[in-house]
Image (cartoon, rainbow, N blue to C red):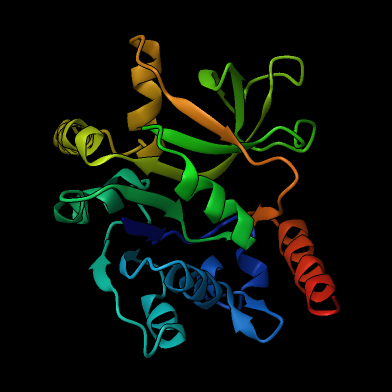
Length: 238
């Protein structure tokens, strides 16, 4: 199992709180978020890790000093969405199943364990406990994605997308080709997840895994960051 981490973006919605660092470098009780993630991955035996950097990449590499990982750099992080990051790492998308995740996601150990235990592909993690607060919204039934997007109403929303997916080596063949085609057609507004979502519109099965009851947060707003810090402090007191 490989892991590809997307960590190129600026994080414009929370940038004023970041001291010119990437979102994945926020301090979590004395340790950067990206280091916390790498330690979790390594504890679970996931050592084939690649990271796509862009904005202030030096901070990420400094935080991960001593770790082994493959480096990719996306120089177009200000003008293109995450499709460009996956394109730069396209050679990594072969040979094994892969977890693709956004670098600003914090997750407790149980979240990764549930993903590793799920054999579906493609499968995206979601949380049915977050509807009113949801940022990117999913509607699903019987474990299959039906609708997606920020525009979904609370009534249409079954839960929030977490920012992590698992793709099988077989699925990656088509996924990689669709990434190449999207960039080739200058679809720079595309996110890497859009490559998966578009297949839903074509009738393909895209699976979701509900991790309700487990803690996670994506650092989009200062409130997300505060939730993470509160969870870690509470965990340390146990």
